[in-house]
Image (tube, rainbow, N blue to C red; front, top):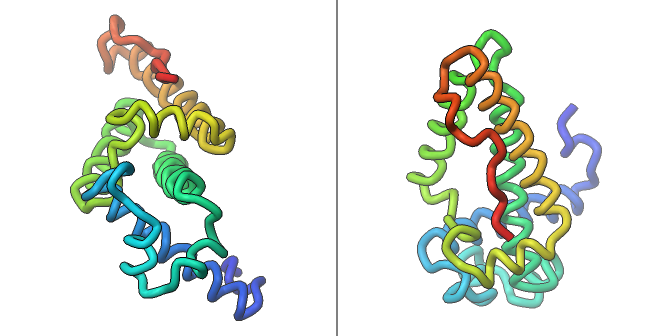
Length: 164
C-alpha cells in the first residue's frame, strides 16, 4: 500500500503540493541559486500564494533544507536499490551516473559547495547533517570495499571531508 493510501484526501493534496514546491525550488536553485531565489519565485512558479507557501515551509532556509534533504534521500534510495550482485566500484559508478543525470536534468544544485552562507545555514539543519553523514558513511564503505578488491586506487582517501 502506498503512503497515499493511508492519508486523507486533504493530507494527500497537502503532500502533493509540498512535492510541487520542492520540485519548483530545486529548479530555481539550479538556475538562480540561493541568494537570488525568493519565496515569491517559488509561489509564482507553482501558482500558489505566498501565505500558502508559508503553510508548508516557515522560511526560505527551511525550504532549501527540505529540498536538499530530499536530494540526499534520493541518493541513499538509489544506493539501496542497487542489486547486491554489483561490485562496490559498480555501485559507485551507478550512483555517479545517477547524480550526473539528475544534475543535467536540473535537479541537483551545487549549493553547499558554492556558497559559504548556504553551507553554514545547512549545517544548522540537524536533519540535513544526519542525512549527509549517513550518505558519507555509505560511500566510505563502498570506497573501502573497492580498494580492498583493487578496483580503486588505494591512495584515494576513504573518509570524505565534510566541509563545515
